[in-house]
Length: 81
Image (cartoon, rainbow, N blue to C red; front, side):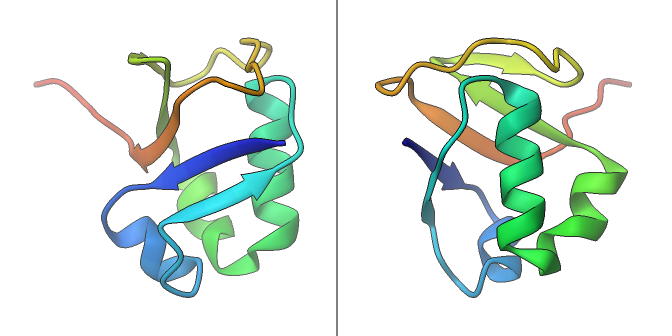
């Protein structure tokens, strides 16, 4: 299981939970599990989110591995301008 920290308004969509336990070994599995277990997150996940794994931001690296001890933070998509 991986502990995922939800940042900002994403926690509101998960019933106020700031941390969730998710069974996932890569980014795609993580997002699929979050979508299945927390339906209110689906619209935001469909729009896109950024995921920090051990301090590095990933947007579309679906098969990026996630270790059980990885620090994982889910946040609204970061976009540059």
